[in-house]
Image (tube, rainbow, N blue to C red; front, side, top):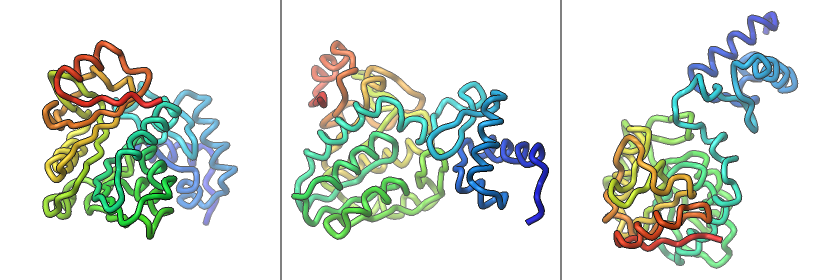
Length: 262
């Protein structure tokens, strides 16, 4: 491949990141036919100029240049210890031979890792709309059976949405849906900031006999743009130590079983 001058290459990289809002070092290396070391150097140069933000494995737009929804790679590093605790507590609620829907997001990824770590689960079927979630769960096959829903790929969360996302979700009935969110509130229920994601989450809740919401403390008593479920649809909330105690008490008064993971 003909070498592109560094300044032009960096401009094109920035265009890709603006379009997709997150790019991996490995993907940029393939696209431009350069080493990953050179890609990192280019991204560091753009980051120093204030045009993007470096994250593990790649780069995202700076917060003042992108939509309010964080990329998975950015949210994964936020409240990581708390999300790991939530993941373990949630995985402990799943029984052998159970059928589960596992939503997308960094807290759901923590749940996936905790499910893989359990050596007592057998014959558990997990449906997911997250490609990265499926890859986490793949490590436990054949103890777990992993089914990926269809749909259009959203790079920010590595998730599958409409069209086609409804093809599997409308035809199944599972024991438990584990749902992530951007907010859970005793009056406004479960909310999310992205409409396509919220649509899929609603179908997940509808397909399940039990709904577990996983949310770190920053999401508790928060209201986002799109409603996913009424508070009466939520059986269990698993949250972390940073959740406001008064908000936890109000959710319990609203009939939600709240487990604060340690």
